[in-house]
Image (tube, rainbow, N blue to C red; front, side):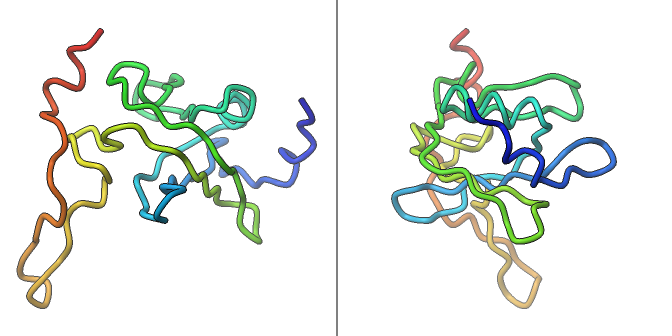
Length: 131
């Protein structure tokens, strides 16, 4: 695997870079997560999204527990090299709360209200009982 691209990326002081995950079929933003150098390389190598958990200090493969995997179709970085855009084929819910996208709430009424803008696909409890 050619890894020369990794030198073009700018990781923050914690060694992380934000990754925006987008549905390759319709452009919907599904989620945002953090990656480190190794998780970027594992994502390229496996074709599945691999992120870095800041709280657990460990890797997590999207869908490893829930079964809602993300198959990478394209991995790009912005002009500054400090943000990734990963287009994926999403299977099931991307959000740990059971929604297709983590961005399922919109602010309404001049900031006084919040509206859930998409249906919940799965009960969040069922997402993590598979293993």
